Amino acid sequence: MLTCAGNSNWQQHWARPDEFHGSSNTWAYFEVKQLDVQMRYRWYKMNIFIRWLAPTKQTIILAFDTRSPITERIPGSLQDPGSNSLGDPFWVYARLAADLVDLQDSAVWAIRNKVRAIETERKPIGKPQPDYRHLHDVARHAIHVSESLNVATETMEGILVQHNNFLSQNFPFQKTNTDTSEDIHRQLLFCKDMLSSLRHRHFPLRSL
Picture 1 (tube, rainbow, N blue to C red):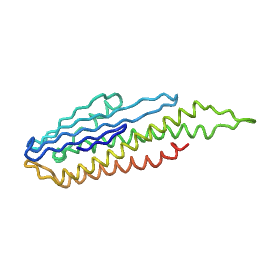
Picture 2: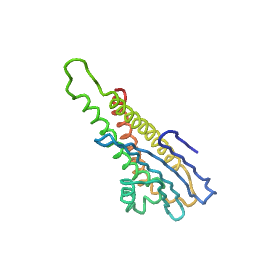
Picture 3: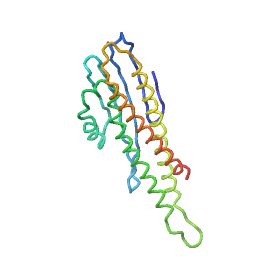
Picture 4: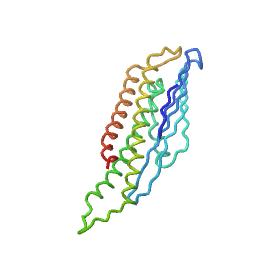
């Protein structure tokens, strides 16, 4: 059992080869904070439970507490996985991680635009009169975005570890295409690296 605490969580359980006949249950939970131009914000959740049945290569997916645009993106992202991908239970996470990267990228740029607007404001003549409430709100939102990025990156690292564990197992009914699983692993790694890059880019904004 692997658990990562924070705004995002990853929890994984692998059954023994003689338990569930080579099936697995996984759960992942991510949150992304989006800020609009009027400083209104919304939290978007990606709360996914997956049961994978190795003998039949079936994937059962439950999504909880979804809202637009997550509601519309999940079905589109999971269409046409291909028969080879269905032999690897992590194909779902490879698809959804790409959506997560898009949402986090948008969240980082929204904060960046707010900071840039503050930097380019005309300096008043005489004693400055900064809007401390506005500055505090921008900093607060930046911290939340930073926290969700930190935990999302750690979550993806945990998923990669568990994918390696999956590839090392010898399930009695395992039907995994090695090339396909390696491609899935590369997709997961790419998304993890993108989140890590966004985290490093966002760090100076949090320090303001």
